[in-house]
Image (cartoon, rainbow, N blue to C red; front, side, top):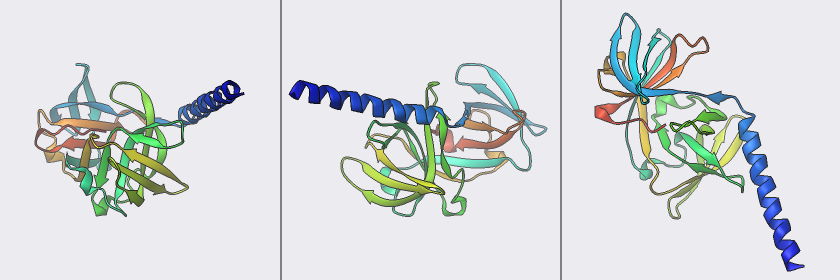
Length: 203
């Protein structure tokens, strides 16, 4: 009986885990491009990807430039607006791979819960929302609320934390680390996150 119960419990966990992963796989997936700035000329950003490929993408008056700098876990507070790339867990929570804390003027940026392609090519989730409850136990456990839902986010102590503020095109200098978010047409950038003073945006 105990063996049967244990097997049932294990099977239940596996099925739940599979359901969580399937749910994540069903979502639209944002696929950012990551690299280093080569130049900006005539509203065209040229950059080298982490894999060594040379890419160009257009910049428009609608391209949002975001300056990203290093922060610490104590910068995450109740009512902070955050974004987090994460891995879905079998218990329904999300395990953060990184957390970005947005300045107040950027509250609402990318709000929601959707698929996300990580730097290593794997697919996880991105959740942008407002921190509700916040518990401090071996890191942080946050409730993150967004329009239409809420997720529980577990933030390990060693996860990279970053601060995001409004940036300028002039900060896209040669050698700067960037994350590019292509627009739907694939020819222009919806947004570009640029690391401050050599910092590499963790998202």
